[in-house]
Length: 272
Ligand SMILES: Nc1nc2c(ncn2[C@@H]2O[C@H](COP(=O)(O)OP(=O)(O)O)[C@@H](O)[C@H]2O)c(=O)[nH]1
Ligand SMILES: Nc1ncnc2c1ncn2[C@@H]1O[C@H](COP(=O)(O)OP(=O)(O)O)[C@@H](O)[C@H]1O
Image (spheres, rainbow, N blue to C red):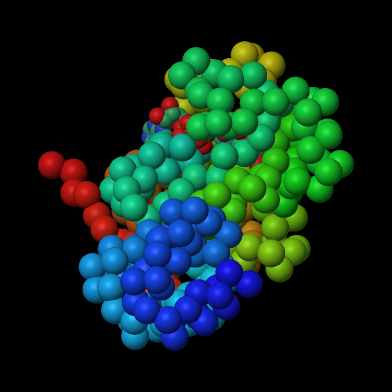
Protein backbone atom coordinates (compact mmCIF):
# COMPACT_ATOMS: atom_id res chain seq x y z
CA UNK A 1 0.00 0.00 0.00
CA UNK A 2 2.63 2.48 1.12
CA UNK A 3 4.94 1.28 -1.64
CA UNK A 4 2.27 2.01 -4.21
CA UNK A 5 1.89 5.47 -2.76
CA UNK A 6 5.61 5.97 -3.07
CA UNK A 7 5.68 4.83 -6.66
CA UNK A 8 2.78 7.12 -7.53
CA UNK A 9 4.66 9.99 -6.06
CA UNK A 10 7.49 9.48 -8.51
CA UNK A 11 5.27 11.50 -10.85
CA UNK A 12 5.49 14.36 -8.38
CA UNK A 13 8.63 16.23 -7.48
CA UNK A 14 11.92 14.59 -6.52
CA UNK A 15 11.91 16.48 -3.26
CA UNK A 16 8.51 15.15 -2.30
CA UNK A 17 9.54 11.65 -3.20
CA UNK A 18 12.72 11.86 -1.14
CA UNK A 19 10.64 12.89 1.84
CA UNK A 20 8.43 9.85 1.40
CA UNK A 21 11.46 7.63 1.05
CA UNK A 22 13.02 8.97 4.22
CA UNK A 23 9.79 8.25 6.01
CA UNK A 24 9.97 4.67 4.78
CA UNK A 25 13.64 4.26 5.68
CA UNK A 26 13.41 5.71 9.12
CA UNK A 27 9.83 5.19 10.09
CA UNK A 28 8.71 1.92 8.60
CA UNK A 29 11.85 0.12 7.63
CA UNK A 30 11.05 -3.22 9.21
CA UNK A 31 7.74 -3.57 7.37
CA UNK A 32 8.59 -2.32 3.95
CA UNK A 33 12.24 -1.99 3.23
CA UNK A 34 14.48 -4.77 4.51
CA UNK A 35 17.27 -3.23 2.50
CA UNK A 36 16.44 0.35 3.27
CA UNK A 37 19.64 1.21 5.08
CA UNK A 38 22.06 0.27 2.26
CA UNK A 39 19.82 2.12 -0.18
CA UNK A 40 19.42 5.24 1.90
CA UNK A 41 22.80 6.87 1.33
CA UNK A 42 23.06 6.82 -2.46
CA UNK A 43 19.40 7.68 -2.79
CA UNK A 44 19.61 10.69 -0.55
CA UNK A 45 22.84 11.79 -2.21
CA UNK A 46 21.47 11.53 -5.71
CA UNK A 47 18.05 12.94 -4.97
CA UNK A 48 17.15 11.71 -8.42
CA UNK A 49 13.65 10.88 -9.53
CA UNK A 50 14.56 8.10 -11.95
CA UNK A 51 16.87 6.40 -9.50
CA UNK A 52 14.22 6.50 -6.81
CA UNK A 53 11.63 4.87 -9.01
CA UNK A 54 14.09 2.11 -9.97
CA UNK A 55 15.16 1.48 -6.40
CA UNK A 56 11.60 1.11 -5.29
CA UNK A 57 10.46 -1.18 -8.06
CA UNK A 58 13.40 -3.48 -7.43
CA UNK A 59 12.69 -3.41 -3.70
CA UNK A 60 9.09 -4.18 -4.49
CA UNK A 61 10.03 -7.31 -6.39
CA UNK A 62 12.61 -8.52 -3.91
CA UNK A 63 11.19 -7.85 -0.49
CA UNK A 64 11.95 -10.31 2.32
CA UNK A 65 11.78 -13.57 0.38
CA UNK A 66 14.87 -12.60 -1.58
CA UNK A 67 17.13 -12.16 1.44
CA UNK A 68 20.12 -14.44 2.07
CA UNK A 69 19.39 -17.97 3.23
CA UNK A 70 19.50 -18.46 7.01
CA UNK A 71 22.28 -20.55 8.49
CA UNK A 72 21.47 -23.32 10.96
CA UNK A 73 24.32 -24.56 13.11
CA UNK A 74 23.77 -27.71 15.08
CA UNK A 75 25.92 -30.13 17.06
CA UNK A 76 26.18 -31.71 20.48
CA UNK A 77 26.50 -29.45 23.47
CA UNK A 78 30.23 -28.73 23.77
CA UNK A 79 31.01 -29.45 20.12
CA UNK A 80 32.15 -25.86 19.56
CA UNK A 81 29.17 -24.08 17.95
CA UNK A 82 29.39 -20.90 20.04
CA UNK A 83 33.17 -20.76 19.68
CA UNK A 84 32.96 -21.04 15.89
CA UNK A 85 30.12 -18.54 15.62
CA UNK A 86 31.98 -16.01 17.70
CA UNK A 87 34.88 -16.15 15.25
CA UNK A 88 32.52 -15.89 12.29
CA UNK A 89 30.69 -12.82 13.66
CA UNK A 90 34.04 -11.20 14.41
CA UNK A 91 35.47 -11.77 10.94
CA UNK A 92 32.24 -10.73 9.14
CA UNK A 93 30.74 -8.03 11.34
CA UNK A 94 28.15 -6.90 8.74
CA UNK A 95 27.03 -10.27 7.44
CA UNK A 96 25.31 -12.22 10.17
CA UNK A 97 22.64 -11.65 12.80
CA UNK A 98 21.93 -14.07 15.62
CA UNK A 99 18.43 -15.46 16.10
CA UNK A 100 17.90 -14.99 19.84
CA UNK A 101 16.03 -18.06 21.05
CA UNK A 102 13.72 -18.39 24.01
CA UNK A 103 14.67 -20.81 26.75
CA UNK A 104 13.45 -21.85 30.17
CA UNK A 105 16.97 -22.70 31.35
CA UNK A 106 18.65 -20.37 33.80
CA UNK A 107 21.24 -17.89 32.50
CA UNK A 108 24.91 -18.75 32.95
CA UNK A 109 27.29 -16.15 34.30
CA UNK A 110 27.92 -13.61 31.54
CA UNK A 111 24.77 -14.47 29.57
CA UNK A 112 22.47 -11.51 28.93
CA UNK A 113 18.72 -11.61 28.56
CA UNK A 114 17.76 -10.62 25.00
CA UNK A 115 21.30 -11.13 23.72
CA UNK A 116 22.20 -14.79 24.25
CA UNK A 117 18.63 -15.92 24.93
CA UNK A 118 15.28 -14.61 26.00
CA UNK A 119 15.18 -16.26 29.41
CA UNK A 120 11.55 -17.04 30.24
CA UNK A 121 9.50 -19.12 32.67
CA UNK A 122 7.83 -22.37 31.60
CA UNK A 123 4.46 -20.60 31.80
CA UNK A 124 5.63 -17.78 29.56
CA UNK A 125 7.08 -20.23 27.06
CA UNK A 126 3.91 -22.33 26.98
CA UNK A 127 1.79 -19.22 26.54
CA UNK A 128 3.92 -18.06 23.61
CA UNK A 129 3.75 -21.53 22.01
CA UNK A 130 -0.04 -21.52 22.30
CA UNK A 131 -0.14 -18.14 20.62
CA UNK A 132 1.77 -19.61 17.66
CA UNK A 133 4.84 -17.42 18.15
CA UNK A 134 7.45 -20.09 17.34
CA UNK A 135 8.89 -21.56 14.17
CA UNK A 136 10.17 -24.56 16.11
CA UNK A 137 10.52 -25.67 19.72
CA UNK A 138 12.24 -28.52 21.55
CA UNK A 139 13.01 -29.85 24.99
CA UNK A 140 16.72 -30.33 25.57
CA UNK A 141 18.27 -31.60 28.78
CA UNK A 142 15.05 -30.83 30.68
CA UNK A 143 14.66 -27.26 29.42
CA UNK A 144 12.49 -25.77 26.69
CA UNK A 145 14.00 -23.93 23.73
CA UNK A 146 12.41 -22.24 20.75
CA UNK A 147 13.00 -19.98 17.78
CA UNK A 148 10.34 -17.29 17.55
CA UNK A 149 9.17 -15.91 14.22
CA UNK A 150 10.12 -12.48 15.54
CA UNK A 151 13.71 -13.53 16.29
CA UNK A 152 14.23 -14.52 12.67
CA UNK A 153 12.35 -11.54 11.23
CA UNK A 154 14.42 -9.13 13.32
CA UNK A 155 17.55 -10.33 11.54
CA UNK A 156 16.03 -10.77 8.09
CA UNK A 157 14.70 -7.22 8.09
CA UNK A 158 18.29 -6.02 8.38
CA UNK A 159 19.17 -7.96 5.22
CA UNK A 160 21.58 -10.15 7.19
CA UNK A 161 22.10 -13.90 7.25
CA UNK A 162 20.05 -15.17 10.17
CA UNK A 163 22.04 -17.65 12.27
CA UNK A 164 20.17 -20.25 14.28
CA UNK A 165 22.08 -22.28 16.88
CA UNK A 166 19.61 -25.10 17.53
CA UNK A 167 19.52 -28.79 18.41
CA UNK A 168 18.44 -31.74 16.28
CA UNK A 169 14.68 -31.82 16.98
CA UNK A 170 14.43 -28.19 15.94
CA UNK A 171 16.45 -28.91 12.81
CA UNK A 172 14.05 -31.71 11.88
CA UNK A 173 11.06 -29.38 12.29
CA UNK A 174 12.68 -26.78 10.07
CA UNK A 175 13.67 -29.37 7.46
CA UNK A 176 10.05 -30.53 7.36
CA UNK A 177 8.71 -27.07 6.71
CA UNK A 178 9.29 -24.90 3.67
CA UNK A 179 9.62 -21.82 5.80
CA UNK A 180 13.32 -20.92 6.07
CA UNK A 181 15.19 -22.95 3.47
CA UNK A 182 18.39 -22.68 5.52
CA UNK A 183 21.93 -23.89 4.99
CA UNK A 184 22.46 -26.70 7.49
CA UNK A 185 25.80 -27.14 9.25
CA UNK A 186 26.61 -29.90 11.72
CA UNK A 187 29.58 -29.47 14.06
CA UNK A 188 31.04 -32.82 14.96
CA UNK A 189 33.35 -33.39 17.95
CA UNK A 190 36.38 -35.70 17.63
CA UNK A 191 34.91 -38.23 20.09
CA UNK A 192 32.53 -38.50 23.06
CA UNK A 193 35.56 -38.61 25.36
CA UNK A 194 36.93 -35.34 24.00
CA UNK A 195 33.45 -33.82 24.09
CA UNK A 196 33.24 -34.67 27.78
CA UNK A 197 36.66 -33.10 28.39
CA UNK A 198 35.62 -29.90 26.62
CA UNK A 199 32.28 -29.70 28.40
CA UNK A 200 33.93 -30.21 31.79
CA UNK A 201 36.56 -27.65 30.87
CA UNK A 202 33.82 -25.09 30.09
CA UNK A 203 32.60 -25.38 33.70
CA UNK A 204 29.00 -24.46 32.93
CA UNK A 205 27.24 -27.74 33.72
CA UNK A 206 26.30 -29.66 36.85
CA UNK A 207 27.21 -33.34 36.81
CA UNK A 208 23.57 -34.18 36.07
CA UNK A 209 23.20 -31.81 33.14
CA UNK A 210 26.59 -32.89 31.80
CA UNK A 211 25.51 -36.55 31.76
CA UNK A 212 22.23 -35.66 30.04
CA UNK A 213 24.14 -33.75 27.37
CA UNK A 214 26.56 -36.62 26.75
CA UNK A 215 23.69 -39.11 26.45
CA UNK A 216 21.95 -36.92 23.90
CA UNK A 217 25.24 -36.34 22.05
CA UNK A 218 25.47 -39.95 20.85
CA UNK A 219 22.10 -39.73 19.07
CA UNK A 220 22.91 -36.29 17.71
CA UNK A 221 26.20 -37.47 16.20
CA UNK A 222 24.45 -40.41 14.58
CA UNK A 223 21.83 -38.16 12.97
CA UNK A 224 24.22 -35.34 12.20
CA UNK A 225 26.75 -37.45 10.33
CA UNK A 226 24.17 -39.44 8.33
CA UNK A 227 24.53 -38.55 4.66
CA UNK A 228 21.93 -36.06 3.43
CA UNK A 229 20.86 -34.66 6.78
CA UNK A 230 23.16 -31.62 6.66
CA UNK A 231 24.76 -29.58 3.88
CA UNK A 232 28.15 -29.85 5.54
CA UNK A 233 29.71 -31.59 8.54
CA UNK A 234 32.46 -29.51 10.16
CA UNK A 235 34.85 -31.76 12.02
CA UNK A 236 36.02 -29.82 15.08
CA UNK A 237 39.23 -31.56 16.10
CA UNK A 238 41.45 -28.57 15.56
CA UNK A 239 39.73 -25.21 16.03
CA UNK A 240 41.63 -23.35 13.30
CA UNK A 241 40.95 -26.04 10.71
CA UNK A 242 37.29 -26.32 11.75
CA UNK A 243 36.85 -22.57 11.47
CA UNK A 244 38.51 -22.46 8.05
CA UNK A 245 36.20 -25.23 6.86
CA UNK A 246 33.12 -23.46 8.19
CA UNK A 247 34.13 -20.08 6.79
CA UNK A 248 35.02 -21.48 3.38
CA UNK A 249 31.72 -23.30 3.11
CA UNK A 250 29.71 -20.23 4.07
CA UNK A 251 31.65 -17.80 1.87
CA UNK A 252 31.24 -20.12 -1.10
CA UNK A 253 27.50 -20.36 -0.48
CA UNK A 254 27.06 -16.62 -0.01
CA UNK A 255 29.07 -15.85 -3.13
CA UNK A 256 26.76 -18.16 -5.05
CA UNK A 257 23.77 -16.30 -3.64
CA UNK A 258 25.35 -12.96 -4.56
CA UNK A 259 25.72 -14.31 -8.12
CA UNK A 260 21.97 -14.93 -8.09
CA UNK A 261 21.31 -11.29 -7.21
CA UNK A 262 21.02 -11.58 -3.44
CA UNK A 263 22.42 -8.55 -1.67
CA UNK A 264 24.60 -9.68 1.22
CA UNK A 265 27.76 -8.13 2.66
CA UNK A 266 30.96 -10.16 2.81
CA UNK A 267 33.09 -7.41 4.33
CA UNK A 268 35.90 -9.00 6.32
CA UNK A 269 37.89 -7.86 9.31
CA UNK A 270 41.26 -9.59 9.28
CA UNK A 271 42.82 -10.79 12.53
CA UNK A 272 46.22 -9.23 13.01
N1 LIG B 1 15.47 -26.50 18.93
C1 LIG B 1 16.14 -25.50 19.48
N2 LIG B 1 17.31 -25.71 20.08
C2 LIG B 1 17.96 -24.66 20.62
C3 LIG B 1 17.45 -23.35 20.57
N3 LIG B 1 18.33 -22.53 21.18
C4 LIG B 1 19.34 -23.29 21.58
N4 LIG B 1 19.12 -24.58 21.24
C5 LIG B 1 20.00 -25.75 21.45
O1 LIG B 1 19.85 -26.19 22.78
C6 LIG B 1 21.02 -26.87 23.17
C7 LIG B 1 21.46 -26.39 24.52
O2 LIG B 1 21.84 -25.04 24.46
P1 LIG B 1 22.52 -24.35 25.71
O3 LIG B 1 21.70 -24.60 26.92
O4 LIG B 1 22.79 -22.94 25.36
O5 LIG B 1 23.85 -25.19 25.91
P2 LIG B 1 25.19 -25.32 25.04
O6 LIG B 1 24.82 -25.56 23.63
O7 LIG B 1 25.88 -26.44 25.67
O8 LIG B 1 25.94 -24.03 25.21
C8 LIG B 1 22.06 -26.59 22.08
O9 LIG B 1 22.16 -27.76 21.28
C9 LIG B 1 21.48 -25.46 21.30
O10 LIG B 1 21.86 -25.53 19.94
C10 LIG B 1 16.19 -23.16 19.92
O11 LIG B 1 15.64 -22.08 19.81
N5 LIG B 1 15.59 -24.26 19.39
N1 LIG C 1 38.77 -27.47 18.61
C1 LIG C 1 38.71 -27.28 19.92
N2 LIG C 1 39.72 -27.74 20.70
C2 LIG C 1 39.66 -27.57 22.04
N3 LIG C 1 38.65 -26.96 22.71
C3 LIG C 1 37.63 -26.50 21.98
C4 LIG C 1 37.58 -26.64 20.56
N4 LIG C 1 36.44 -26.09 20.13
C5 LIG C 1 35.80 -25.63 21.22
N5 LIG C 1 36.49 -25.86 22.33
C6 LIG C 1 36.12 -25.57 23.73
O1 LIG C 1 35.09 -26.50 24.06
C7 LIG C 1 34.15 -25.88 24.95
C8 LIG C 1 32.76 -26.03 24.34
O2 LIG C 1 32.68 -25.20 23.19
P1 LIG C 1 31.36 -24.33 22.91
O3 LIG C 1 31.68 -23.44 21.77
O4 LIG C 1 30.88 -23.70 24.16
O5 LIG C 1 30.36 -25.48 22.46
P2 LIG C 1 28.81 -25.44 22.11
O6 LIG C 1 28.45 -24.01 21.84
O7 LIG C 1 28.66 -26.31 20.93
O8 LIG C 1 28.09 -25.98 23.31
C9 LIG C 1 34.57 -24.43 25.14
O9 LIG C 1 35.24 -24.33 26.37
C10 LIG C 1 35.53 -24.18 23.96
O10 LIG C 1 36.51 -23.25 24.29
